[in-house]
Length: 250
Image 1: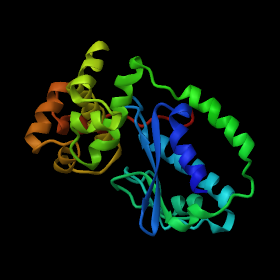
Image 2: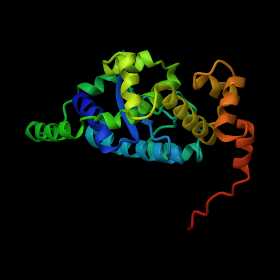
Image 3: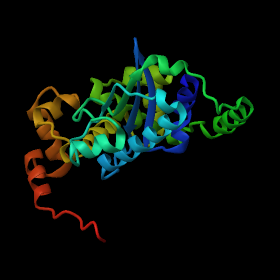
Image 4: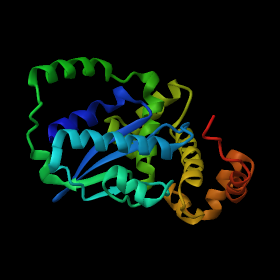
């Protein structure tokens, strides 16, 4: 099972360039983390909950009765009654969490899958390796994916991103300049996208959001938000309340 999830993590970007999947091990427990990296996605809650539903079905299919998650973390606020989540997923999520993640016993990763086919798996790997190569033109999008993933966990620096890419900070900046951008510009764009996403989809207060995006204080974040949108984050939130909900029948 562990090898299957590691392969899914490695090649997930071939399936979707707007999201990232990663497997983490923490002692007796493991986490399967799902991260939306497309800053243009309007309804992140909808995207995440669809992915969580699909992953629940996949994990149940592979592990059968052995699939007994310890927890389900979701970044956003609930969009329905908690009982509806428990009915569909078999567990009540913990909302407004740092990540979107299934939490389960690490021992499940050692379970052998009865449907495994090594020859077919090797053919699939060879095909996906061809698709997975990143070109220089795609580098800015890839850096933004890293920023969207790492920002909520702490401040992000060009040194950390360069180390992940196994290049020097100067080389990374030169590559980005070739594509008419810079690390600071990508960081600013990423913060802007995450700010509007969290204001729309979570119940975090503005002070928490400022810290989450790596700002020293609320006033610094508010100035940046006004520069992006021409209004304060408080005014932006109030404007959401004046927008009528979409008619689900259309």
